[in-house]
Length: 206
Image (cartoon, rainbow, N blue to C red; front, side):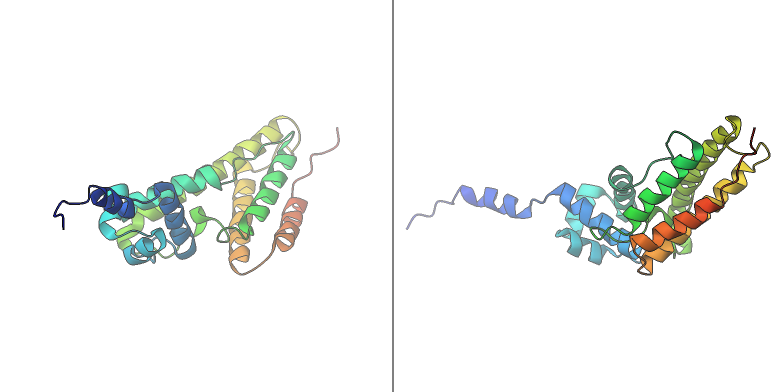
């Protein structure tokens, strides 16, 4: 019986150890999206990703680095962009309806990772909370910019409080997120959008 080693064995072992990095990252995103940053453990991540802890650290760094990469994937894949449309009213209404569809899409966890990802962060994870808060503030600022454009073009009364109205729609978005987590469907969220847009200030007739 030959004592020669099978040259295919090392390659086979490497193949077993290999993993699909993109698929693993998508699995990590779903874990963070479902449970939040602090509640998601390394054990739950490695189980969902189908890898062991050393492989996770080698491929992604630590848990925080993995979360940051998962957030970037979320933004590229799921996040609704800033309001865009022929006028400010249409732009914000369109954005809210896109969020209503996204927050209730059965193909991924409900709601928005940027809103819920750091809800219950411990003192040691305040940097995560700060990062996500900054992203929400950027979104609110884009709404305010859209509203100011509406004021400048006469679509809104000249005395409209752009920052206050933007904060109102940001609060609507956060409420829609919670409603989606509580099981509300797309139709219900669209009714929320209807009510929110009914509060839109009306410019005086020329």
